[in-house]
Amino acid sequence: MTHVGLRGALLALVLTFATGAGALHAQQGQGARRAQLEGRVLSEFLDRTQQEMGLSAQQRTRIEEIMRASAQRNREQARSAMQLRHELWLAVENDRTADAEFSRLLERMEQLRSREQDAWRSDQRAIASVLTPRQRAIFSFRWMEFQERVRAIVGQRRGMGPPGI
Image (cartoon, rainbow, N blue to C red; front, side, top):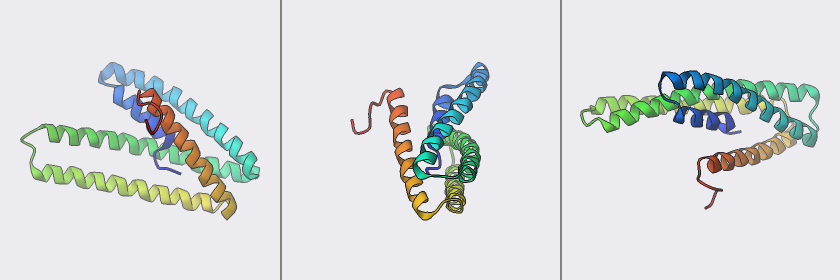
């Protein structure tokens, strides 16, 4: 499972185009629609995966809980990352930015990436506690396929076309 996924990609798109006070209001409305879409996409993914893997209702419920908690955390981390990138960009654009400020921003970036990796590992351990090794392998494979499809869709919406072009 990737640490940003669909939720992070959608959030990045929304935040990239949202500016100003009016955009904040629009973003809140989009956030509700995005959360609804995320829930539907996750449920559909889990429905297909549950059927293919033969998950019990208990396993499916636990996996869904893990993934929903992860999605919330990923949204928060994506917001932090967007803010940090913006601060770094402003520092780079300002010729008077001191090296100490660059060091501080780069340290914050490293800390954020470390927290993302720790969260991903925690999610993997939680999923491993619910699934058999075979189910974990199938789940991982299906999740990677799902993520690739999401990246392709996001890329097409950004006008980049399909991967590899």
